[in-house]
Image (cartoon, rainbow, N blue to C red; front, top):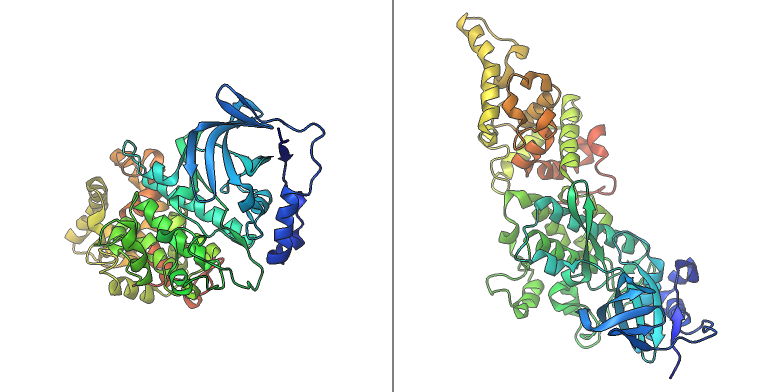
Length: 500
């Protein structure tokens, strides 16, 4: 029986200089990883035990297929011992050794919590087996599980995980080329806060390592990715095998579709009135016929704003992933509230143009309903309005005496319901004076400000989901940024996002 060859690949096997000339040096690196090694003294033998096929240190169950794609099949299995469960990816040796295939090279280089890690490869006949972490599910199955309700914050976390993983790939000048829900794996982690998902990007069979000036990659129909997640330039440049320059913007477009899929809980943003059938999606992509209704709710204001850049027809208009990841869509409640307070502090110090912010809210009232409109106070819950009414009673008594109230005595009435600046100031002022709420213990209910007012910030973030996004767009202009706000624009140094 032919021997089985074992290969353990680490990042040290490949020096960084081999990334600079991908078409020549990387292909030779991949060949060296799979061919140029010292075979074991005693070759492993392929055997079967308890239904598992054993190849070296890897065992897998041929009857338990986790997933299947054009380049590989993934089985349930183990590494070294049955208790160490793994996902075993079986790839064609011919595909792995193809000069255009960079999968082993990429798998050996990456070490990141949001990118799939592999441990060892075993080789037998025409196949190579890769042992990888065993996930709970793929993203598409996790999202579309009919028996599970996915919390909004957890969906945001999954989106942040995938984007963070892509940021690391792009940092290493790797273009994934096949971002889609099936290529995102979900791992469940038990924490003090409950079960939390962690997402990892996987399947680098189509990935390419790019240098600073890519020569162009042939993108024939057979290896260009998944049709329903491809950017429009692929359709415009792939008549036959016509090559085009592959750029990170390719991944940004695909990622935008994936983010919309995740936040809409399984719907495709290019599946419009024609229906969900995949045959209608590529024509809609080519016409940039985006179904914006899918992300029209106030809670998805930030996503809608982000996608207008990520799904742009022109690759040049799609931002780099580090700018994308800085957008408010990815912020948790704490960072969102910190940003609102930063804006308020700059307003207080006269470092921000209040007039421009107010005018912007009025101009985009249609896209961002009620925030900065006629009466933002109407969004607040009754116990909070009751507390505010109590604050105004001393003022009413003062007015009965015929005396004029000064600014400090105006209390609630100094905050105008039609002014977003007054909303921001109200949030800041009350955040600094929790002691004024002690006479109203009902404010500490979990759905309001919470015990010890720990949910104060998240309450206002929830009630005004459009606020941070509009402020972030307006304050991209460096001319009106104060020192507190400027810290939120580390990578976004241009007017990248637009309110439409």
